[in-house]
Image 1 (cartoon, rainbow over the protein chains, first blue to last red):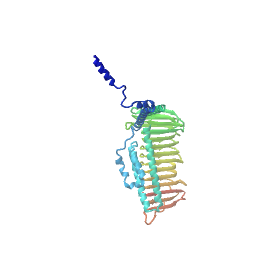
Image 2 (image 1 turned 180 degrees about the horizontal axis):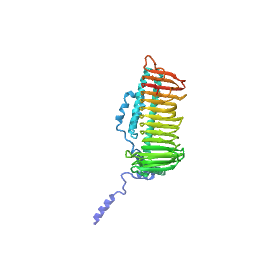
Image 3 (image 1 turned 60 degrees about the vertical axis):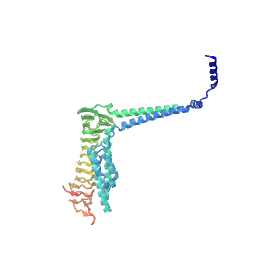
Image 4 (image 1 turned 135 degrees about the horizontal axis):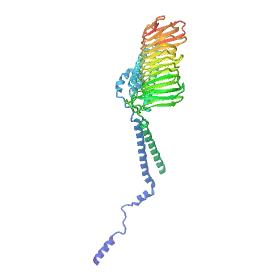
Amino acid sequence: MSIEQDKRLDAALAKLPRSIEPQHDLWPGIHARITQPKSQSLRHRWSYGFAAAAVLVVGVATLWISLNLYAPAPDKNFAEVVPHVTPTQTEPSGLSVQFAAQLASDKDIPPAARMALVDNLRLINDAILRTQAAVKKYPGDVNLQSLLLDLYQQEAQLMAEAQQAQIQTNVRTSL
Amino acid sequence: MKRALIFVSYLLLSLLGVGILASAVMLTASSAYAHPVNNGTPINETRSAKINGSIAISNVVGSVKVQGWNKNEIHVGGTLGKGTERLDITTSGDGYSIRVILPRHSDDNVDGTDLVIDVPIASRLSANTVSADINAGELNGTAQLESVSGNVTIKSNDSDITAKSVSGEVNVQGSADGAHVRAHSISGDVKVDGVGGDLQAESVSGTAKVINSRLSRAQLSSTSGNVDFTGALLKNGSYSFNSISGNLTLMFLVTPDARFDISSFSGDINNAFGPKAQRTSEYAPGEELHFVSGNGSAQVNARTLSGNISLRKP
């Protein structure tokens, strides 16, 4: 290398800055992350939270599936069984109509018994309607009133019997 | 804070473990002890028993036959149906519980189990079935027999009898004097023969029929079925017969000693023991009949909406 070249190099070196300033100060951010452990634990908290939620979801789902895996599906024949107990004429005994609908969808009860319960609930309903009509026409007839009271009791009793039958048949699946 | 989170996580994991374990147990409970039964496996089990202990029987499909005998033991015979999981005979209180256990999700793949059970004659019997007939005999304790769609028959000298079915027939033959008897069916017929004491016999759409009774108190009713009573009335007895559209036929073997209060809203009333029924009102269709036969010691009430009422001699 010649003396001339050395001089040019020295001049170029002399033009270089003594120090280099970063474009912006990164240190405050780094300092904050180091000195604020809470921000770090927050991340862990989220992780724990997600893990706990996942565990809970999996647990609940497992239980739910196991409990409902073999639950009886709604009776597809429901519409065929119920129509004759759901006409508007059964308004006075809406509860029994609902109950009949519920019975009709209970596949655990033997079909013969199920039909007997639904049909006889309808029968009592019809009898109640007839007797109510008679009582309305002859409000002073105590015998009619007594018959009507008996029918209400029979209706309640039949629903109780039906529930008993449901319990009896459901024992099969709970054993 | 971190420890708390770890603790909560462990807690949740533990709950998950318990949940999975419980689910697994529930899913496999039947198979854990499963001993699938081959077709018609015979049963032959004997246990010592108290003379008046309790016997509780449960069967879903098939039949149950119970017979009283003079031994202080129970014997369970019959056959387990194909697909049945097992037969449980366990002590329960002062007696035994006999249960036919089906696989949890057996659907229709299980044949009926026929149980033939001998029990001490004074046993307190209860039997529950779904689609299995119940037949009990030669007993003098108490009996509570219930089936959903099976027939229920009891022939006994029991003092307290309950026989019920939803769609099956109910037959009660005999009882102790002064017994409490309840026979009930929803769509099946109810027949009671030779019972004494207090009787309640009901059917909604079936017939309620009582013969050869020695009843001091009776309540017979049906909604659309007929009610037939044949027997004598006891002194100071109380008898009630009701139907909506079914007919009431009351046949008294001897001239009754009773006060009668009979009414029907639109049915006819026929009386073989005295006065004829009267119209209740010029404008109403109903008939009533009130009269006294003999000294009138017993009380008879009979009511229908549209059914006919007949008081008959043999």
